[in-house]
Length: 474
Image 1 (cartoon, rainbow, N blue to C red):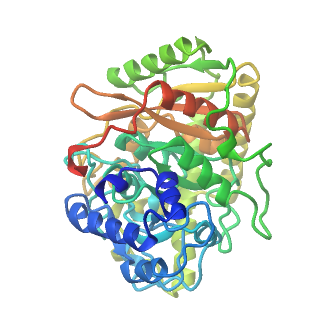
Image 2: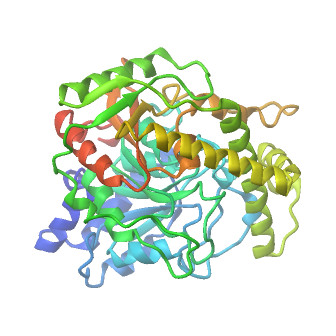
C-alpha cells in the first residue's frame, strides 16, 4: 500500500474503478501513514477516521475520485458534525452544522475525508504556527516552515499521507505552501469555486478555494469536479471552453511569457529565488516559448496599503462573524497577540478608506490586464526566500504586527493575483543545493486556467517532479 500511496489521486481512483483496490484499503493505508508520519509534522489536527471508515465501507460511487482519501484544511470548509477551529481558541467547541457547498462537491466526486489540516490563526500568515494547534513542519526539513496558510495540507500531501488536499488562497496560501513543499498549487480565477452557503465572497473577493496536489492532472480534475457558481452567488467566473482535464497534455502553442524577479514592493529577493525563476524562464524558452524580461508598472504603495487595509478589515470581519455565530464577545485572551492587533487595525479602517483601497486594487487589476494584452503569462518567483526556519515570524510583545510585516518580504509576489482575481499557479521546478523546493509562479489572464494547465503539463513532462519525495515520506 505504500507503493499505492505514491500514486496521485487520479491513479488511486483508477485502481478503485478497476477493482484492484477498495476504498476501505485506501482509507486504511492513509490513516496508517497519518499515524506514522503526522507526529513528526503536525499536519493533521482533526482526525475523522470513523467517518472515513464508514464511508469507505459503502459502495464507491461513480465520482471522478471515488474512494480516494482526502484532507480538508480547517479553514472555511465546513463538514457537518465535525469541529472547526481555524487555528484559534476563540472558536472553542464550535461544530459545523452543515457542509459547505465545496465539501458537498468533494463528496459528490467520491473523495473520502479522513481529517482536517492545520492552519495559522484565521489563515492570516504564510507560515503555519498557530498557538492553538501547534507548529507544522516541512517534510523536506522539519526545522523549516511548510508555508501557509495551507501548510498542513501541503505538508500532508508532500509526505504522502494523502495524494491531494483542500487548500484556499487569500494572499498566496495555496501557492506559497506548494512552493515550500514541492507540490503543484493553482489558485483559480476569482469565484471559480463556490464559498457558499455561508459566504458570497471573502476579503473583497481575494480568497479562492482549490487543492494542493502532486500532479497537474489531479488539480485539473478536481477543478472540473468543483467549479461553477452556487445558488445566489454574487458573481461567477467565466465558464471554461471545455473540461480542464482536456487541457492536460494539450499543445500550449507558442506562449508569450514575461518574467521578472523584481517584487512589486521592491523588497530584496534571495539570489537562489532569482536563480530559480531564471532557470524556469530558460526552460520555457527551450520549450519554444517567447520569453522576455518585462513587468507591469504598478504602484507599490497602492498595492501594499490597499492589500493591508483589505486584509486587516477582513480579519476584523472574520472575528466579528465568528463572534456572531458563536454568541461570544471578542477579547484579547481568545486570540494570539498578532491577530488581536490586526483586528484592532482592521476595525480602524473606515468604510470610505476600505472602498478607496478596493478602488486602488481594482485599478491595479486593469493595469495588469492591459500589460497582459501583450503576454499570455507573467512569470515570477513564488516566494522571495526559500522555506524559512520555524519561528521566523515570531514577534516581540511590544511589536505584535512584526510577523505580518515579515510576511510581505517572504511572500511579495503572490498577493497580486488575489487582488486582480487572476488564476495563478506555483510549479515545483527547482530544488536548492540543500534540498529545499522552490516554486515558479505563473499568472494568466482572468478566466484562463486552461493556458496554465496546458503549460503546467508540458513543464511536468519536461522536468518531472513526481518521483521527488522527502526522506521522511519513505
